[in-house]
Every structure is written in C-alpha cells, then in structure tokens.
Length: 493
Image (cartoon, rainbow, N blue to C red; front, side, top):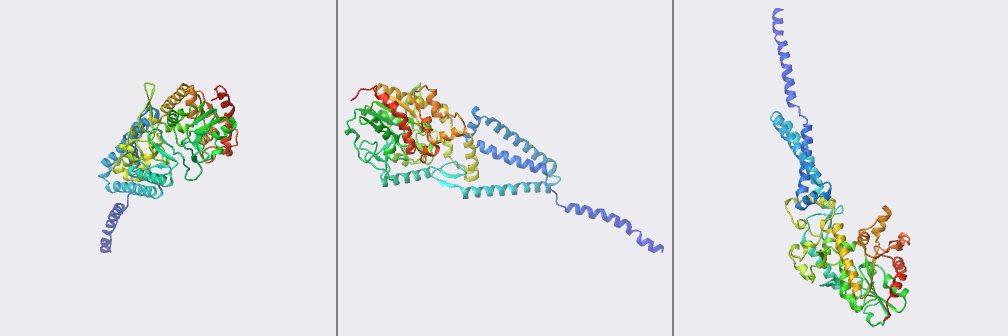
C-alpha cells in the first residue's frame, strides 16, 4: 500500500502543472481581433488624404476654395488637414506602443482596412469606366464631364461637324466678324428654314427684300428667339408683326441662331445699318449674356452645333473694346495642335488651362469623377460671375442704344422669357433672371415679354425649347400697338 501511494502521489502535481501550460498555448494560437481605434484612424486618414488630393490636385481648385465667396473653402481645407494630422497621430502612436508587442494584431488591422478599401476603389473604377457616356468633350458620368479633357477628341468632333454640314450645304457659314451668319439664298437641311439673297430669314430661298418699296422699315435683330427657331416663317413673330402693321411696313428678320448679345450688336452695326430702318428691335434671353463671355462657344457650351470662333468684347476704362476680330476661320482652329494655340483662348470662361493637363492620378476615372464633381460644386469661374456678365452686356446694350439713335432710328429692347424662366417662376414667386436684373439695374428702357407669354397655358407657350406658333403670335400681339406708335413718330419714305 505505501508503494502504491508513492507511485500515485507524484502524478497529482504533474497534472496540475500541465493544465496552465496547455491554456497558454491555446491562447497563443487564438487569432486576435483588429484594433478598432487603429482601424478607425486608418479610414479617417485615407479619406483625408483623398480629400487633400482632390483639393490640391489642380491649383485652380485650391484657388477657388480659398475665395471668400466660396464660403466653405477654408473650412474644408482646415478640416481635412486637422483630420489628417489627428488620424496620422493615432496611427503613429499605435505603431510605437502596440505593433512591437503584438505585430500580428497590427498587421491584421491594416489588412482589414486595406482589403475593403481596395475592393471599393476597384469596383468604383470599373463602374465609372463601364457606365460613363462618351461625348466630344470626354466621358460623362452622373452628369459630370470627367476632367481633364483631350484636345484631340474635341478636334475630331469638330471636324466631323464641319464635314457633315459641308456635305449638306450648311444654312450657317463662318464669318470673320460675327462668328457665323446665315448663308444667302439657302435652305436648311430639314427644309424648314430659308434665307433671302441678303442672308435674312425668308419665306423662300433667294427672296430679295431690297426690291420691295416699303414706306417704313422695322429691323429685328437677336438670337434664335428673334429668328423664330422651331417654327415656319409664317409663324414667326416677326412675320406676324409685319402682317399686323399693314402693307406699308416691312419687317426684316436679322436674327441668327446661337447669337450672344455681342454678336447681335455687331450684326446691327454691319448688316442692319445699310437698310436705314425706322425702328430697330433688339431681342435677348438670359443665356445670350453668357454667350457674350465666350470666344469659342464649343468650349463654354458643350454640344454646341458649330465649331466657330466668335467675337469678344471687354470693358476697359468704362469703354467697350473688341479683342479678336478678324476671327480665325474653322480651318485655323482645326489645325491647332494644342488648345493653347487658339487666339484669345484665355478670355473664354470655358477654358481653364489645368482642365487640359494630364498627370498620373488622372489615369483613374474614379478620381477624375471626384475632381470634376468638386469643381462643379464650386460654381462658375470669376470670369463669368454675374457681376462681370451683367457689366459687359449692359455696356453692349447701351452701345446699341447710342448707335441706333445716332443713326436716326428708334431702338426697342425686348426681353424674351425662356422655358427656364417659367420653370423658376413656378418654384419661386417673383423670381427674376439675370437678363431681367441686368436690364432693370442698368436703367435700360425695354419691354419684358414675360407677362405677355404668360397669358398662354404652359403647354401652349413653347415648342421643344423656343416659342410655339401660339407663343410667337402672343409676342406679335403684344408688340403691335407699341411698334405702330413708334412708327407714327417717323416720316414715310
């Protein structure tokens, strides 16, 4: 019995010692969980780095953010840097205090962070590349054209436009002073619009207005709303006005699709003056004001249907100065190897040099989308701010008024409300457009046709974008008595 007890007794302590050893090995083999504070810091750090890259990727973005008018610019930059430094501090602290003691847990946390981030970035890149719409300016994703742009793509599109119009016999032709004009004795490709021998809107190709011995003349000049786009000649407000005024009055339509306020003024100076009209009606919409700021409309307005240069005024010492006439012909534009070679390109708000510069980060379409979205959120360039736009166009309209009176003609300025204007009025009572504010703020005598067109039911006012036959009839009806009164002040020829 004593020997049996001696054999069993040592085994008790051995079993008790063996227990803790097994527990420690199991604990060593157990996989540690990620370090949650470190994981959060890594995500914050990565987002902050991305934000800083987007903001500082192009110098112009940083400059725009720093403008006082941007409101949030300085806040965004400071917040991004603070988050970056705080997150970076947490990461460094965790590395110094935890990584050396528990490198496996640190590595696991980094892996848990990187795997979903890389998967998310990869999925985003694939989605943007697959879903982006290809356009002449570059890919468009979620209504954002991805910066930077490629001049070669723009050139290819413009060449195709010119070839297509030359084959069909374009209704419009490039002009070294006005940018483009209506080609004389022409019909449009869809047989909807015709031009006279003098290059005016007419009822049939080759009509000669100069042959008519009118006792009084009214000239109308402006953009597509004056021209009467989307309706036949007989339905234009200009023709309806002529019929209402009677057989002794001739109304000549000098309107041209796509004109800015500046081009309408120059068309008056060159093409309207020789006709010695008794009354000159100058029509505009708000979008015309922004066209006046451009030197190459296909840059400022993507999708523009003709690749021509246009004239550009500036205000110097409170006086108008015309910069770039004669204009480069389309062949010169298409021969440029770089957009920087285009004359006076720096005066076009649609041109930002950095928008055409590529670097390594721009190879990622997802990054391009983020930069482009941020740029869009910042708003318009200072060159096309409402203050600058109003100032230039106000001076142009005033110059027209002075010139018309000096030419012994009676000027009449019209404001045409667009579909956009009525849409805004439906949302905000009493809303006014930039064009209306420009005319009112400049004490420019004018007729605002908003109340006139508003007498029609909303569905009856417009065709796709311009006035319907009913809309044109409403304009003519509102103008007839006023124009008749102005003509009564003039002697008969």
